[in-house]
Image 1: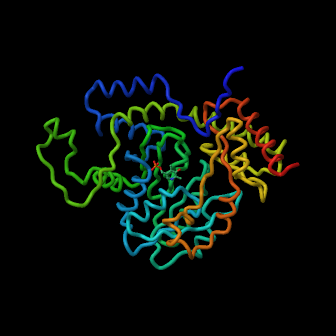
Image 2: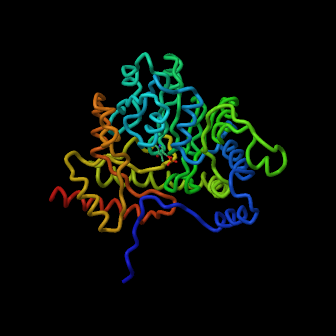
Image 3: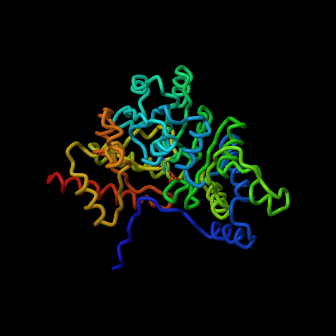
Length: 379
Ligand SMILES: *Cc1c(COP(=O)(O)O)cnc(C)c1O
């Protein structure tokens, strides 16, 4: 009898090609931001409708940089999804602006709600940030209309959505993450996509302390000193990670297709076998299938279900714990009613989903979840 393998919630797909790409950069000698970053930006842009792309060290920094470059600061407020990763909310707070959480549409449709957003606007509101949760596309046309109507900037947190065709087309900036558990990874990294060429140029300057010439140019003798004409940041990506990102980008379409196939299998198995478990969104929704999230039946002891699955060798997670209840954040958001977000956060469970999963794994996960629900309900 062999040791039972653990089915991971997400597993980076890293192979020989990635290793060779990294080794090539190391041999070349220049490992910080340089040619490889430029290649990565060009390739990412080509894969996303040729919109200008600016690489950064992670998506949190990317969101902060985009908000800052768009002029968001103290005295402003930004509408943010009630359901999101805390880093996206922190990015707003770094600028000195107020974050105004907006409830999600409903527990099985946990995108920021447009109708609720209209009631959350204040005279200081300058921007709205939407997030393609689990990779499921937000209705960007509707948000672009909303933003235009109210004179707001529109930002996309596209951390879950690389390869989604509409991303970046309707917003002022869309920000991607290449953290290890995302659809493509370079360990830590991010990318900002924007239709605005001038904004892209400004983002490029601001990510490197707004220095008038980057270090690489100076080592090549293109310049011997530099000036700084505004307060910038070090939010650069490096050539080692960019090399990794380039290989992952080439594999992205295949990764996303495989994720979608596995998600479709989950949808079929749940509706056939465990109909009281409700996967979020639906099988027809356009998606990169970043996560497979579902709603457990009301009053399920989620911690017991997670423990049962863990002991059966299946990792699970929660996307996301409600940030408005975090110890540090709760004082900021005590006045925000978020009933749908709270219901979603209390009942949601994320199952393993990554391109390395087999159909057998998915069958096994659904069977085990059925058992866990029976046990915890003592049926
Ligand atoms: C991962 C993630 C981020 C932050 O990305 P980093 O690259 O880790 O900074 C932001 N928003 C969402 C929705 C995410 O999933």
